[in-house]
Image (cartoon, rainbow, N blue to C red; front, side, top):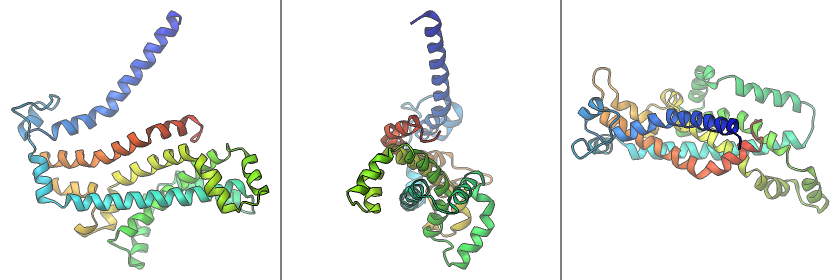
Length: 277
């Protein structure tokens, strides 16, 4: 390696390290300060907790004064069901648009692409009226339907690009053997979509888990609140319980980190395979 190449490599690594610190730093600060007493949070926010500042009072208040486990279960139900439906319907729609050509397929693909560019929140009033008319207001089903509609355009776009890279000879060979189209999709195509599915799963899970807007306007009772909405009860107009807020936020971050660690290898494979080209 020449001197210029070594200097370029060092520069790239320094930039990546700086960006990683910028991205991970706030998360570490939230988790670290959730284990401190209130005075230490504001007195020395960058210092790790020690014997004199360590405290679990925030977590104790969260479990004692809120239904955090119920909020967690609601978020898990909404996120996992939405993700499963987005992956299933997205893969099936991508397969149909890619494999079969029919009148209107190009217009349908363009319509789905518009769904990526236009934020779904612009239709919040119409969505709220629709859910009220259907009797789905203040239900987890309403959130699932909204999130499925929100995630399908991106899912179809990514999976369509990936399906196009699968050799057509594989599908034709299965058809020559008399394999039905459903089995070709689920047994031949779907296993090859694993990296792309992991990419779509991460892009779907994170916005749903972190969303505050639709739980705020579509749910009103404590039994249907998600974890992001449940954190808001510790934020007051004049007084904020920062120990509880940081503890609840730390607990809300944990599932997303775990999912990313589990799917990180497949996510990287999907990104480097051109799934989002």
